[in-house]
Image (tube, rainbow, N blue to C red):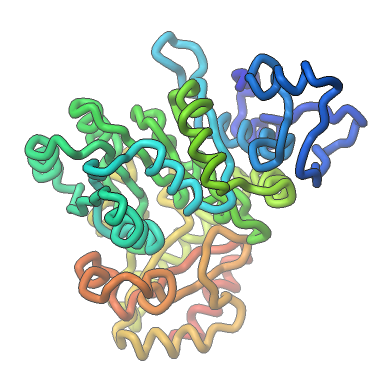
Length: 406
């Protein structure tokens, strides 16, 4: 990917990765073709050998994939420089889902006998991947409280089998944060691969590559797409050669490729990322303040509230506390069910990052498959409600919450 000459984040959102269509369409058309033709046998041989750039098969690549990948890589690298002082070069690979991108990350780097170190309160799908899919392959996940840096250092010092450090910050759904700068430095000291789930924050609020991360992961279904129109995931790597070689090979052979339509929808969604995130974040701050003082609410998890345990960490590494929050009603599970049933505008749905405000109950939805004792250990209680604050008028959001809590 060539460094972008653009100086504004929104300009990169709109223009990065776009190449003029040969038929002069304003937007890159949806290339609904499973395969691509060659002018000659020699050209086909050059493309397969990598001597000539070009498209071969849509499981591998397409113009729609390339535009979305280049755009996301440019956003994660925005304003950052490499060791030589030149603009940071990254490579992204688009996947059919976030879980597909995670599978590529783990299977491209871990083998039997390796371990991955991670922390409490992960997305339920990631938790299940760690507990159900990797162990039969001989890969073990060690889960600890990585906000305790001394404990984390002790674990790394005493277990040379750990090969990767996987961080999700802010975490889903408790909004826990870990210290990216300190932990990635620790990973580098112990020669570990560092990978960060940046889905909740987006590159607009947080750039893990600024702290030296090797990989960044997104479920593009969420804020990057922003409209709930397409499933997707992306893996972005600092080592461009490795991303273009062994990582891409795993990606191709797993078959977790995206498709031209979803890639097209993602590209259009990213164009409004900055303006959407500004409104998302403004609304979330208002909602958190309202809930924090409400008599029906026992606690609120929002990084913009000074009493959140990770307020200071988030302030250091994020531009804004973000659009996500969770809260516990004083009446527990039953009160939570009644609250959700009474909502009139806010939607009862899983997922997040869409234009609508989405509210869900993690214990029975996103983290249903995580054993109860683990959920509670990670503070994902039966009464916890997760909220993805949308773009509606904040007055209407507050009115709906108020009547549902009454």
